[in-house]
Image 1 (spheres, each protein chain N blue to C red):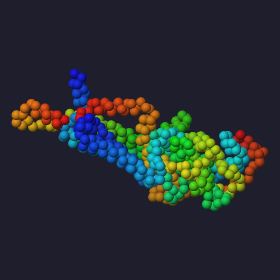
Image 2: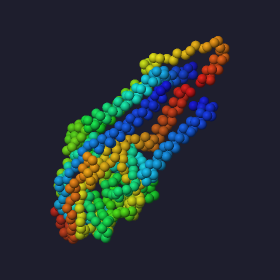
Image 3: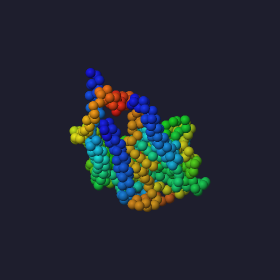
Image 4: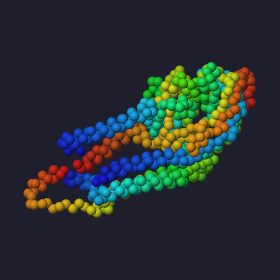
Amino acid sequence: MAEQLLDQARDIFEGQIDFEGQKLVELLVNISLTLVGAIAFLVGYFLQDIKLAVYIGLAGTAATFLLVVPPWPIYNKNPVKWLPVAGVASPANIVIDETMLR
Amino acid sequence: MYSSLVRLQNTFGFFTTVAFCVALLISASDFLSDRAPTVNVLKTTQLQVVKGRADYYSSKKEEYAIIKFTLDADLSSLFTWNTKQVFAYVTAEWPSAQNNNATNQAVIWDTIITAPSSDHLGNFSPSKLKRLRKSAAGKGIDPSRGKLQIKNQRLKYPLTHPTGKLALTEDVQLKLHYNVQPWVGFLSWDQNQDWGKWKALKNGLSRKFTLPAIKTKEQAKKKTTTGGTRA
Amino acid sequence: MLSSLGNPRQAAAQLMNFGLILSTAFMMWKGLSVISDSPSPIVVVLSGSMEPAFQRGDLLLLWNRNLFTETSVGEIVVYNVKDKDIPIVHRIISKFGTGPTAKLLTKGDNNDSDDTKLYTPGQNYLVREDIIGSVVGYMPFVGYVTIMLSEHPWMKTVMLGIMGLVVVLQRE
């Protein structure tokens, strides 16, 4: 029972996403943070207000974190399709494979 | 990028890189703004040398100078969005008697001019803070603060010399300096030469003067009581 | 975490990686130290005596070479007082003489009086040798983590707790 609960907690904590999602997240992080930095600098420079620049930068960064850290469903649209196990293998074999994968 | 933790770490890592680049750009933007500080008047209005304790806590009696000066300067062009404060100070400078190379330099008065973005950090009284806030009126920069108009200013720090002798010192000059403290980047001081868009501080020196002979005790007392400045 | 112990090659690689990070940081620190000729080229501000210019936790970049001019009045310097460990960041307010024996007096912008009382008894002035660098660069806030960790020991416990939780919740 405790083991199951821990497993559930691990699932939530881990927040895994699929390969396509990982690619998308990488792109999103790079684009959004660069954009936030550029906007913060330009707005600050032209309005000559450094506080505003800091606030824009921090708010934009917080938004980026919110966008990419949780495993939003959008990042899990392309689950990996495993091939069926080839041939008729004995159950014992599968168990060994699994431990090896771990 | 597989798990939340890795995404958190990677995003934070890239954030530090971006923040560092933006900081670098901000500090570089200083060089794009014009700096043309000017001094209209810097002159002494009172000179006096007295023998006694220069400060209430100093243990020995020595000669110290009482100087009053008038200053009219415009440092408002030093304020940009990256200026945190300007530290303006007036020094007295004179060559050493024994050795011409050795110089003496002492700050006699200074003032901290905060930018509106750093008003809350200063060690100000509530009424002064209120006045500063009002003068900025929500703007990022308040050029009016850079204008220094000071008349008959008494010195803030007693002017003394390690030898204890100051009377009849020749070729003393007052000089206005400033130090610009940025929010991020490099500190800068007043320059003797133009440097790109940053112009040198011209006219920042007073006329050379000679400190007077020591006032006798009676004279000094009389002077200070009439002036009402030093007990 | 534990399974890497079963794989010596992986464990060794991790150890190497960790060592590489440490030695790179050390090399950069020492390199900067050589370039700036200062034993401690980057310092964290620990006191509020230079406010509002420097707050606690700000990072200062120091330079200790006199390439064109001597260290002079108006510069903000970091100095060590004999027999005291903590370096102090204050501004030079007077300088009498030139060269290594020039007498220097310092004061914090936010303090009412000069530093004579901070020096060792009987010492009225600093000399150039006492100074470990002049402040040339400034970066706000970045050093605050070190202050938090050294002044609030419970933060260390919290950090250890978070790290433990991460280990428990992480799958291999």
